[in-house]
Amino acid sequence: MSVFAIALVTSILSSAGQVSPPPDHDQPILVDGQLVFPEGARIPKFMTEVEERFLDGQLITPPRGVTPPPPGPIRGASEYEEMAGILLAWEGFSSQLSQMAAAITTIGNADVYIACDNNSEANSARNSCINAGADPDRVITVVRSTNTVWIRDYGPRYVYEGDCRVIIDHTYNRPRPSDNAYSSYFGPQFGHEVYELPLTHGGGNYHLNGIGDAAATELIVNENPGLSASQIIQYWRDYQNVDTYLHDPFPTSVDYTQHIDMWMLMCGDDRIIISDWPTQSGSTQDQICDGAAAYYESLGWEVFRTPAFAQGGVHYTYTNMVVCNGLVLLPEYNNISNSYDNQAVSVIEAAMPGRQVVQVVCDNLAYSAGVMHCICMHMPAHAGGIYPTTCLQTPIEGIIDPDDCPQISWISDDDEFDVVSVDIEYSLDDGASWSTILSNRPPAGSATVCIPDTPTNQGRLRVLARDGDGNTGGEISGLIIVEGDAVDGDVDGDGDVDVVDVLEAISQWGCSGTCSADVNNDQSVDVQDVLIILANFGS
Image 1: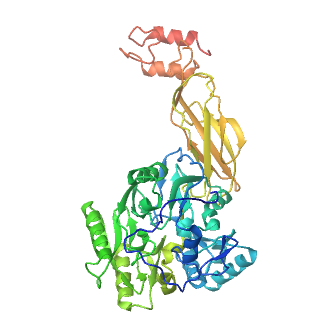
Image 2: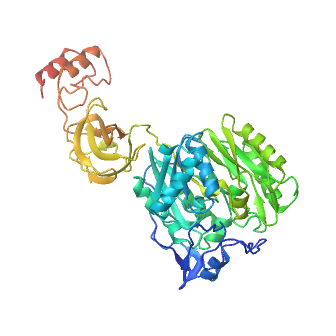
Image 3: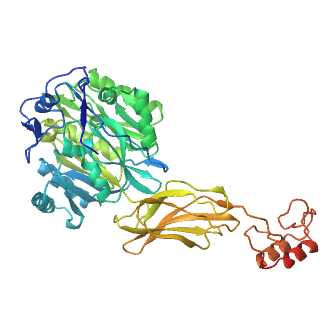
């Protein structure tokens, strides 16, 4: 992603209940008109006073050209399905990050990918995580500068294109350039295509299940004033293959960010956890949550409610949890009654049975307007297991003229990010055997592929990837039919007259009407047809 540009528009904050955030948070520094983010600073999730002065009432907008949506079939990846890893950024809050990494790499059976500003920080982060109990083999540091810990808002959102993981990126709704650029760096490092969604956005304002349903708040409309709600929803449909429902946002007096992950989590295809406000019944936020619960119940979903509490400008929520395989990382708070913590554990165990709940004290994150979900991003599991996968982005099937040379494109993926080459292969017999058309192609690319002119009604094209361990796998096209000059006696249409045609005629002996072995078209399969086949045998 290129560095953000700024266009003159209104502030991103909703006017509803707008308040100034507390002044005692870490902030970036303005140096010669540029923002500098001190190392180790706990920059809050919301827009700081210094950042607002820097923007001077302007709005961050996507400056770059639109990347077209993924051309292959798309499926949004939910957080409750199998995960390969969790992404983190080592920017303050090291205690929570280390505890999360320890649980994720052990109970969660996943890797952690930790963004670090330099090699020294990478060593420190790795040691901190291992000392907290993380599996050393699963702690992976990515040396790349970031500005803040809030990787949910700027990090890569994964979808599946075919059986390959790809990234849908957006422009971060904060003036934090290193954060904004992170996905564009991360994707190529791990062999994943990056598609740029033309929206200004914070990724915490989004939740989806695995079957095409999604939710956000109407904050997204304020952030993109040049677009209507329906246009924004269509972008998400085009890039992620989801239908998104826009909910009312909380007042900023309750939640500075107005992100939906602060009060909602989809935990199944038709299961959802939504905040409840037992001590603030009838409040605006309570009405929003009750309305959302009623909406999903009307769709037939099972709705679970966890308590929430707001005091002193701090939003204490439990829906901002992290689900990773058999693990649920659930916030707990020292500054409110532990009865809320206990209620939340009971609800989560009922909503997601079979997963182990691990609680992490998160008061200092909540003071900065986020919790654990806000400081991580999910990487779903590779669809092929140990075998590489490919996606033929330009499907080829149906009737093909002899010697036709269509242009195809492909991407690939691997569990160890280790696709070394791709071969393009062709089959005349529905995949029983394959011949190589092009070999040693890159993991992602395009090529002109000339289909052999041999007539067949059982043609297939295969994009076969090979990884560093020698494992192979790939996508096979739909059925290809190559029509050529008819050969008398070619019963099976493979372009040859051979023993298969003789056997087929014998199997259809006595057939009347429309029969493939009726080569002389006299509405009967008899000795005359066999004689024609034998006369052309070997053609």
